[in-house]
Length: 358
Ligand code: COI
Image 1 (cartoon, rainbow, N blue to C red):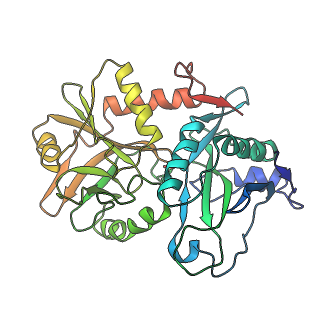
Image 2 (cartoon, rainbow, N blue to C red):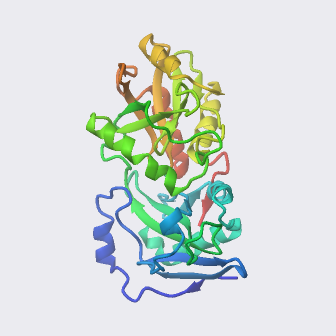
């Protein structure tokens, strides 16, 4: 079933859009339309439509407002030099949205509907895909429980929305290295919890520690596992990697607590392409700290769709404060970032079949 189109009666003019696409930051501008589908327990997925971007009136008893029945995704559409538009591994996001939905007792959106919603939205809003360096159209698909019931149960009505935000760098400083605070008092996830699901609650819970880190002068928080408080998990919204002097690259293993990053998975492939070894395993904070102190670990970086690959220049907690390497982006970090973005922006051949033309 095709998406019905309800055109925005007041879309941005060419001049207004050009103005909004200037000096883009992350996640502040939005396109003229959004895609929308509704699921009901009786009828399944239906009412596919693209409609004007705008407020979504809902009943104050809607379940998302009370019990946080929400999951989301993030992926980007890139403008290539020839003007064409390409998505990076969209099926991986569609499939992860299904896994997140399963965990949160939300209905799974078929991959075909996920893909069709992007096509339908970009059919109308393709002019919003920016072309300045380091910019893209960030796509934010999400599901919310909208049934009107205060009892706690799997919702019987759910809405899927896809909004799009022309964006520049996630961090205002661009690719300048960030500093991270290792959090010992709070955890992002615990065994059997929702750490692997991309649900809004995980991100909400990261904000208090994030505020405390900001106050201490740090950009981001690195979480440890809840069971032992010793093993690295991930940052508030990014996976983490460490590069050893001998070229081995380490990253926490997927253990049900951390997000299965699409960028993470891609970085692993790109590291292996350089004939470096990637080891997915438990990494203790002690190993990280000592490795940095004695020069065994030369680079640390974080990765995610929004922030791409971000070098980490400094890591600290209550009892230590270390500079990674010389505090500047390392060679492996820079090379992987360059290679990944070359593929994403069509500057290099897409040897892995990652890109999907819209
Ligand atoms: C992304 O990297 O796309 C995310 O969803 C993380 C979010 C904190 C922006």
